[in-house]
Image 1: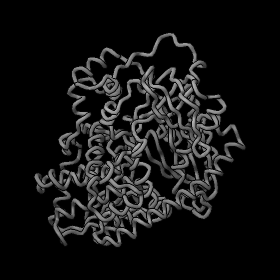
Image 2: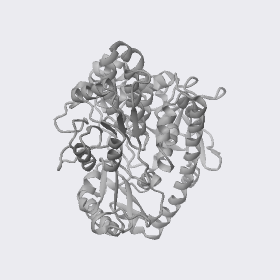
Image 3: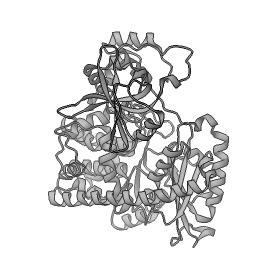
Length: 601
């Protein structure tokens, strides 16, 4: 539980006219004044920052406007995930709108994950120049692409880098006429956590507002936000500040999906934003995986085509292909996960180490990042998953002709994964990422040394308490304080995501009413007493059937529960209910030295 200043929360609640528990949650998110609460709870387009406060924007806008005026061929160089493909769509659409029908030549390149790997490549830039391109704009990539930037400079072609990944502190910025990245040194841009598509959007915003400010702000940019919201949520950047505004406004716009590709994808994901407002969970777990599947399993450039074509039949065909690829991705992931779990079972030392490094032959490179996340979820440790590709000899230098390995990593709070791999940078042929996720390639022969180096590094930088499983909760909320009105008020925190997560509440000494009901032999439905004379509230505990039986939970049992609030849409027995995240027998709980702070709703 976080430290709680209940008096300060009550003061904020009174001045802002909100429930105390909501005031507590806002204070945990850095909101301490009624003015800040108003801004947080009532998002508007005006909360988007001035794009010109981003370093390099003036030069970038001038160069793109000149290219449009001279009808110069432009290459947009993207990435193969949701963030990268959406960035291409937004910037390409903006430039073509400004230029007018048939008056622009905006090409794009989205690398093939398996054939090209991550990042800008010199040969692609050289081919673009040979085909007539006079300006290259990178989106969601390029901040460490020194070789490609130098190739562009040597060929006399202008390069604009737009990216959100962390720059190389040792080498600085790549040579380009402009670099747009809020994380570059001396950039005063207020939101440091834009996704890659967010940075590309700021360039599009500056261009569109310069062309027709009124139309841009009233019609075009709000429409762009629906795609940007998908990228922002999918890329798991903090949903605070400008990112929160982007996500909230974009989800509102998704209620009016006009483009045939977006409509088809929503239908295949069984989402109807006209009937029900989408949530960040819908986007993260139903929309984003389908878009990502193209880059993981096939050709991500088809995502750009799906979101830009006006041919509804073609858009539908591509959306259906993404849906099939997502099914293929799930099957591939499940097969490799079985092998990973076997490795962890056979060698307990892997699971017990401070940093887990797993590798295998021929594991599909498109899913190793997802699998690294699965290992983190299972073990509570930072994890790297590596695939060896015996038929690839791209290591270069002294290792030419040797098999190459590709890896992807995910981390835990308090462990900066990019700094960890930077500590052994000489092992890699290529690497990049940020605190929570990294990707890299290296000669296969170096994997054992990488495992040892990361284990040693994590052993120094991780404490044992960092590895203990921990459920972070937000506030105490007794069940007798839960009402439909409070639920509706708490919904104003949405969209939720990183740093603004769906709140977890704690209630203690809760009585079970009646016998728990088992659903599909796995799940449990409980009725929990709100309080004397208050009736009961339904609660669902997913995959808890075995554990509850072992605990002997039955009618009259007293529980301490961690829960999230949900709303059941069923017409007969719908309403507010609890989704149980954890529980324990109240009589088994350790005696606490003080009572939980009172939280009056």
